[in-house]
Length: 343
Image (cartoon, rainbow, N blue to C red):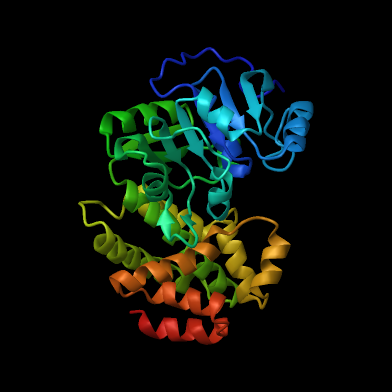
């Protein structure tokens, strides 16, 4: 089989080009595949030179989505984040949120005139900021140069060319449309939005709710209850989004409800898997070690709990997950209390 992208024939005339992908995990690999559908080449930042060497030798990411072969002649790999920032107009960040600050500490290149896209479905710990807010406050990137990619999108299905719907969001709608064009293809359908902050918070919360779904699955709660849990999670998410960023939005859009459902129900969801292990009796530490992958919702739970101290939104599912993960309350006891609050 020919490597992915070996017969590229499309135009790369997008105002956002050239593009750099920042990250080396499964979603970063999927994002690289998506962008290479429309762009002749990309720059790809990875932290470790040995990972780049293995990628060049094997023609695929040595650690993630290993069945996905790339035409490496179309990829400029680098371990220098400053080089990627200097060479490219658009930087798509796809690193786990707990590590974002450490990556950016190496940065000396000014970001304020770059187009910064976050495909990170997490929050910056300690600062308790969604990623675009972090770029705005720390790196002075203006709103019109900040964007997010959201929507129900397992990297494994993108690798298989399975139909996926993504939302490109930016306060500058023409730039949102340019981003949508950048990531559109035969298997990626896109829409645009200006709800950058709402989409980011929704993507954090859906990971928390997926952990809750996993915990309930581990405790042998069935599909009947899981559907009630997801229904209440959607209502809880909507209450929080209305409180923190009160603009007109439809919570039933795929970027909100769709992402919640796919993360809460799918076996591809690392947050659900993490929650399932907790429900089966694993400690947090042992579950993290065995998974060998980041469950963003673990960090997101604490951040959202802290953030909600400012807004005082009624969030019983978030509170229950926090109590289980951080207060070491018995999952069986905490979920029983949660079930009594549902109607």
